Length: 257
Image (cartoon, rainbow, N blue to C red; front, top):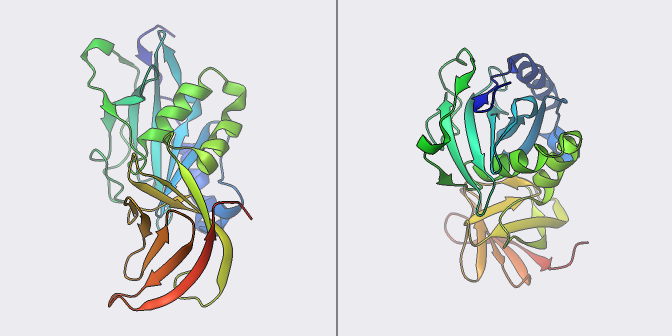
């Protein structure tokens, strides 16, 4: 393959096979491990959307850039695939990413995109690309990090993807472990991991990133309708109803159970 080209691999069949699994396995499959094949790796879940990278598409371009394709799968409607984007990651210094083409508007996780477009080899002019900072809640941070790390370790792609799903994120990531209750349930789950980044204003609960989450100087907040408020000093977690009524209070700890 010539330098400066991006290989548009026919990965739709792999995405469709994953969609079939998700349709039957449902979100509970995520708790054990994200389904994947050697050709694609799931690196993140944001609400009910999985973010994956076509590992076969990754191509090193010079000393600092990697080109590839990432895709989105909506768990509520696994088929057809929600969309994809061809990208180039800048791996030197703070991670950055440039989108070459996409079936989704920038930053969108909506499940109603146009059909997947025909994929052809396209010459790349790196000097003309517009690179932007990466973020957790649009999927670009872990996409770029996976591309940069796994392109030099292709045999470790599955391990790297799992590491990113479980522990990936900005360098200021912190964790607290709290007693929480699932939506609509009175059953208390002990020691649920709440991860957060003040730098990127992003929150994940049990490896699921939440668009409802945000971080203040003293608290981590997430949830729609009823809202969880977690003390950053790992003292307690409170669940408040729409009227501000305290519905539940659980203990937190900075140490994993």
